[in-house]
Image (tube, rainbow, N blue to C red):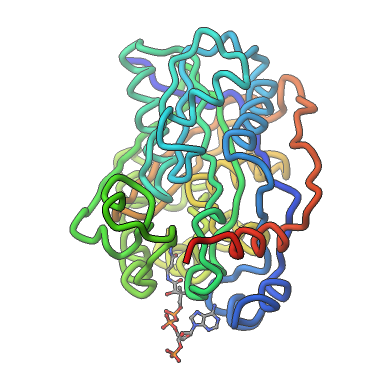
Length: 353
Ligand SMILES: CC(C)(COP(=O)(O)OP(=O)(O)OC[C@H]1O[C@@H](n2cnc3c(N)ncnc32)[C@H](O)[C@@H]1OP(=O)(O)O)[C@@H](O)C(=O)NCCC(=O)NCCS
């Protein structure tokens, strides 16, 4: 059976930067509290639809793979913040890209969404159901934030990352992948007010999280999933060239690094710049790592995530030969006429009470 390998990559982050100090002008918090508890220094706030960010990230990934949108036969979007519940956000992306031959659907596994997406894409390629897949992790989490909930409002940000997956007969590609979930802990991280269960009890949309419960489970779950991916790949920790963990909290990343006994230079960390962008965090970090020359031909990567569900997943990926894009796209978001902070404040003022 053939497996999937990554042949294109790209990202899109909106221009609306909001620093911790700016956030502290509208929330009872401080740069010191946020930075020491989470490692976050700033986040980006989108002025456009989530599907617009996803489309720009997709265009960069297509160019990097040397592909046209019409070459795609599948678009898979990992998101928990789709533009709307119907249709799937992937359908909007398909239309915006002009990917006329592609099937399109979404997957939602919270912050583990990108790993679930890789798992699904790998299966589609292994069975021959699809040959050229665009997988995008894209989130507009700031849409769900309530600035009066300081425990969650400081943690999340917006952005998108994308990859192209194709079949390979070589030693490159997804060598192993595992995903799991524990729905008994669904209440530890949830969004109230959006979804059919809320129709009879209209409730403002907001993220509700038991931070300590999530933290405890994430520390154990991330390391366990990564170790399983290593075992199933026949690799050891010493084989890892780069660990790309979901960027939820610097302390969770540090604990995972320590459990796996990795050195700091083996781990991608960019949470300070973006906050938690859920399903987008790993493909954004992967795309940055490639641009920074941290991925070499044949590099052994481990991607690992944990999130709402609770869900978890990890994959061992051997990189192919190419670390330079085939071509570059000039795709970009339109400029914003408001600052990131203004977008957040306007939205808060418009919230139903
Ligand atoms: C959210 C998290 C940073 C909170 O850190 P914590 O050490 O557990 O903090 P606590 O929730 O115990 O709160 C400690 C105090 O800080 C206060 N606090 C909460 N948010 C605050 C904020 N933004 N600014 C200032 N103070 C804040 C609390 O009110 C509490 O005050 P109290 O002791 O007077 O009641 C941490 O639990 C965490 O990172 N959890 C994992 C979250 C995550 O990664 N989720 C996504 C998974 S994909």
